[in-house]
Amino acid sequence: MKALLVIDTQYGLIKQKDFTNEIKKIKKLILTFKANKELIIFTQHLDNDKNSVLFKDSPNVEIIEELKVYADYIVKKSTADSFFNTNLQDVLTRNSINHIVICGFNTEYCCMFTAIAGFDRGYKVTFIEDATGTVGNENLYEMPGLDIRDFIGSVLNWSNIIEVLYFDEFMEKIVKLMLHKSSKFYKYSYKSNIEYSSKYLNIPSYITFF
Image 1 (cartoon, rainbow, N blue to C red):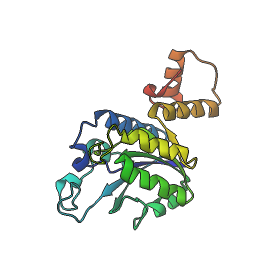
Image 2 (tube, rainbow, N blue to C red):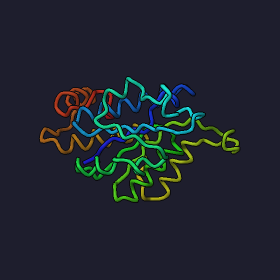
Image 3 (cartoon, rainbow, N blue to C red):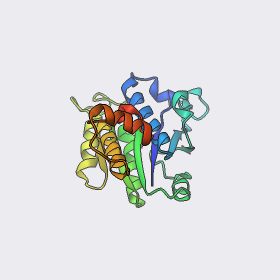
Image 4 (cartoon, rainbow, N blue to C red):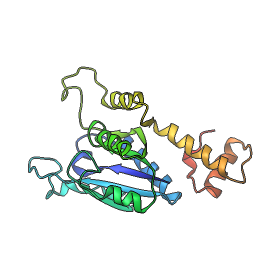
């Protein structure tokens, strides 16, 4: 069974850039998992540093409301590794999860570290590259021309231990898998696929790619 892990979608990070596209994709992932009655786990980073945008006593530490309402669990953490000193693995074990799908913030920090930590603990890990975002940039890392998301996605992909997909690729796999498993699987027209996926498979119509 798989679970969606939504990393640190908190006001302190979201306010720093225009993450409209990333939030839209994350929400569509959430709605897809919810429609298929699959587990949705949020992480919430709590920092002890008063100068941090995610200082534990600041209102900015809250998860954005439009997404938080879908959480089955909220795992509180204090490091980039969502497994370290948290109850995440216990939640996954109790729900018989063996595959985690990662989205959220920041790409090169909590998302990447959690992906690697998940693999190290024996989980299949899928990293949705363009459903992650970062407040970092080329100036922060003093690397002109750096595309952080593309760089991290490439490194994880080249590792051959973590599956890295774009949002559209992941959604296409979900639809094809559901259609294949369904006893009502036939060759439909584009319009029929949209109607069929929505009506019988609990897949919102925006996820069809035929």
